Image (cartoon, rainbow, N blue to C red; front, side, top):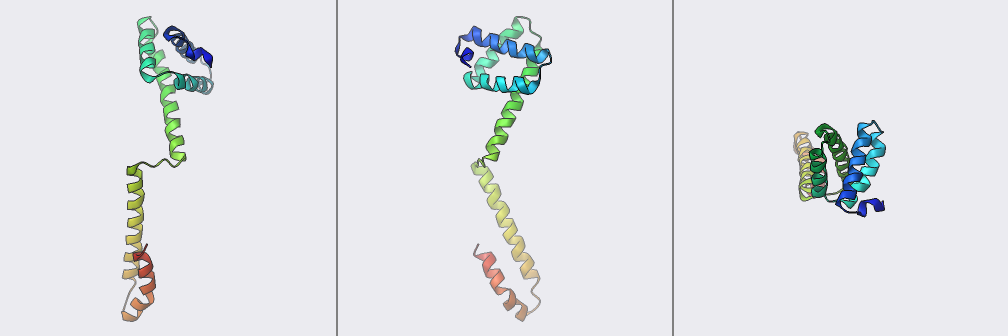
Amino acid sequence: MSEFYGGFSDRKEVLKNIIKRIHQGEDPEKVKSEFKEFLQEVQADEIAKIEEELIKEGMNRNEVMKLCEVHLAIFKEGLEKKEEKDYQNPTSILYKEHEIIINLCNDLLETLNSIEDESSFYEKEKNIEKIITC
């Protein structure tokens, strides 16, 4: 959408148009896809400045807030897609490792609790070794 490459006032008009369309009841999904393209071409601080100017020019703050709801939905969608791509940050890796360790400990505990005497220990020995060497 080459219209997004224009100057500040051009981008302000595009954003104003999007807000008006939401206000007029246009399908949010249609507006969301156009707004998503707009977000790819404009920095977040510039959007905030445009929104601030629109409010100063008399646009109702609640109408601007409706756009923020669409904005949040787009960010949420983006985060969910990152999770779908199995994005792993160090914390998520630690949580997964922690879960694996707890499962191994539970398996070991269950196996040890099932030992009744020396002969049953030898029956479970291979299972214990398998758990320990994971």
